[in-house]
Length: 332
Ligand SMILES: Nc1nc2c(c(=O)[nH]1)N[C@H]1C(S)=C(S)[C@@H](COP(=O)(O)O)O[C@H]1N2
Ligand SMILES: [Mo]
Image (cartoon, rainbow, N blue to C red; front, side, top):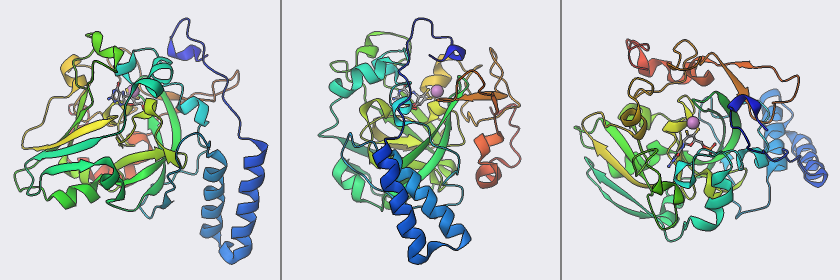
């Protein structure tokens, strides 16, 4: 149980360990790659990382392998969080506000087929994409990103997807398009959380167009080499690794290009607590708690240290220039 999250009465499953067989196979795979001549410094590191991702493949859902990403900063070498943790400790308020609710309810309830994503607004080529076509629009890549929740915990997840920029280029934004809004599924028949007024539905998020075009902004279809589990936002979600987790909208049904900064679910709920940008920033506290440190999920044992939260969640070299000249205390 994660005592630091202040979730009384919530029993968290014990993190699963990598199976010995998977370890054995990934090690064999790694040795094969090294033997095949990948031993030169960087390549060996890549091979080892690939082997780690292999070992983490859980064998629960349809495989969705991703190729090696060439995007700068797309692969952290930190240890990935266990699949069991990533899929059982979730925020997906459409299925309830408890961390265990989405894993308990979403797998059976959320219907991910058929699924369409509609692209509309200020684009030259609006249209509806069947999820099967969206999946094939660009090559799937594996990205190992940290994701940090505004509540103060983080995970390291091998996502599978491609840069949202690939889709944006296809639909050709008009010159007037300045922001991209993401609308997610709100189906009262399958999402019990919608009965609660804790948020106003549908859950929406938005990015500035240049943030949405940044190569690190991932349109994700999978994790751990398989399609996304429902509780993690199947069949398609966003992952914006330098922003608080809530910007990474799950189960997207609509992408809309607009000219003005949209209000989002969280800026509507509490504009003094949740800013439009929501870049991870250890120097700007949430009004009710510090953002200076975080707990890595799966590391909450007796001797686990609190980690220092990094500016832009550690992605400053890649994204810092997007905010040059912006007062990050004002535009939090
Ligand atoms: N549609 C929708 N997307 C959402 C949320 C949500 O409640 N509904 N929660 C957000 C929050 S607060 C976080 S931290 C991440 C959690 O993603 P994960 O459960 O895959 O770790 O999803 C984000 N996307
Ligand atoms: Mo979050």
